[in-house]
Structure formats: C-alpha cells, structure tokens
Image: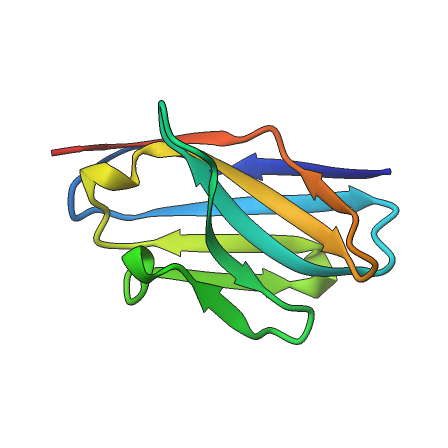
Length: 116
C-alpha cells in the first residue's frame, strides 16, 4: 500500500503564499507521476498541477505563473508552492501519486482558504 500525507494548508490573504507538502510512504516502487488536485464546495475535483517522474510539470491555466510543483525523490515528497493566491483558490487540496501501470493513491486533503 501507499500512504500520502499532506501538510501546509491554512489561511492566507489574497496575494499571499502557501507551500503544500506531500510525503509518500509505503510500497512506493514504480510510483511515477504525482499531482495536486483541489475541490471547492459544490464543485468537482480538478487537477491543478502534476509532475512526471522525470520532473516535467503540467499546470492548469488558472494557476500558470502563480503555482510551482516540484518533487524531491530522495525525500519521497512533492511540493506545491502557491503564490499570488486568490480567493478562488480556496479549496481542499489533495495529493495524488500514480504508479506507471495506472494505480493511483490519494492523501486525506488539506484545506486552503484565501481571504479577500
């Protein structure tokens, strides 16, 4: 099994920054892509950013230029640096880790609230 534990969420003012961390443990062999998703109240969960095992990033248009995804394979940790936060970034943020064959795992989520 694989366990993911997120941290770093909280309350920020518009224009502020937060950094999320996701530590992966357990049977992490063949874990390849990692991603950050978010779900706001009444909305579907959406992919925010992802990073391949080789370090290639992907961002949804709404966060490009503001968020940065990274990973430290030695620490089995993925990060999401969020700058220039907006109230519409308010959501529960979830970390996802995916094996090469497609099996995915989720963390428990961390709340991010941005006040205007």
